[in-house]
Image (tube, rainbow, N blue to C red; front, side):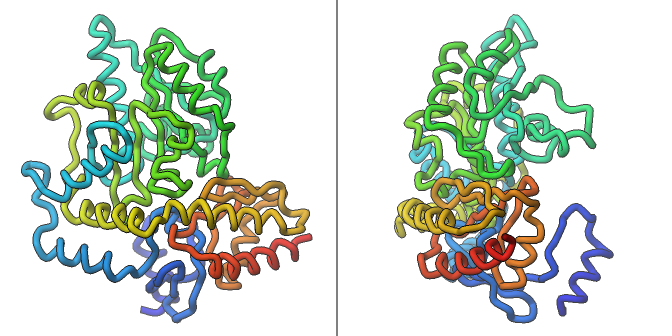
Length: 397
């Protein structure tokens, strides 16, 4: 099917929830994508942080093909080896104890919210009121009703009110604001270690540590949303490792299975055991195919030292971007291969010009160019992408 036909069919048969660019992707290899006309693009969007080990990895494809040839989804009525192996990996990497598998980041947040509330009610059996969760303004946790209630972007929330109750929002990177918002009804605090959709907002180094101390002092759960920051993107498997703390609950999704849909909610034993039979479930969650994809991805990240690559090449890329002389750029920031270029103008036109020069980037929060390339990216690819960005941004002067 040619690109024109694909675009016409999309308009006819698919609900209009996405703002798409005018190309149809056919295939990929490493850090590059190819459209239906065979044109090659450097991919710095990285499937929005999902394609950790790159496109078209044949070993990855072989691993999934082998699993599909055996069994796809016997469901959670039965035990499956790949799920248990993945749970053990994640437990070891997180320093937490038990996993619940779902199909997306939003679902992993839903599970975290339910678990926090169930734990609060079990711990405070005399009351059903201790269900409050403090979140951050401009945060993004998903588009289902629970994750949307946690999300701190009014523009996203407003069309779907009334929201699930019990959530309050305070300034990000302000631990004192969190402490001041605590009431007798508060059960948990949820934050992203780095705000992604808000424009790669990197908090002060002591922010998570301060939140950990506040939650300990008040007997609250600390929930960290590592959907975008996790799986090695910031140079550690979990971004909270930089702060030398552990959350009570952490959520993972995007980069865990290299583009195959998965979500995971991980919690300390005492909290995880608040869930009882039937409290939560997922027909497709943790099926053998997605767990094989995730097991392969985690093993590939470790074997090829991609977290070290994220640190080294992330620093390299950020330093090069800071050398661009353009009045359009307000700030370059990030950690590892999670990079934001904040602009003094809206970024849509910059994205379009880069697309014309065969470079794929994403714009979030209207004026932040967000770069989330596969963790396998090398300096040569960075240099090529940088020249395009430099040319486009300096032309804006």
